[in-house]
Length: 79
Image (cartoon, rainbow, N blue to C red; front, side, top):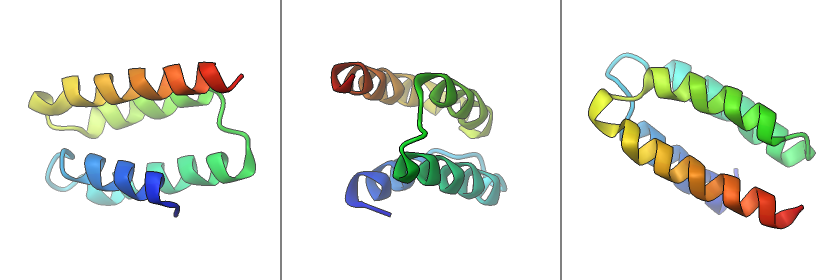
């Protein structure tokens, strides 16, 4: 896990619903694998975002939406 992945990992775990930590860990591990392999697409990001949204505490959803928007902009600039 690189430093940006660690930062995202910590960001998500701080906002995940109690009891959903293992599921969030699994989703992030798969996501990081896609990033490392170069197969992390905007479409895949949408799937990951939807899954993580379901695991986040309701009062923290806006934080995740904002972070995902920034990431999507970075991805678009990279293409």
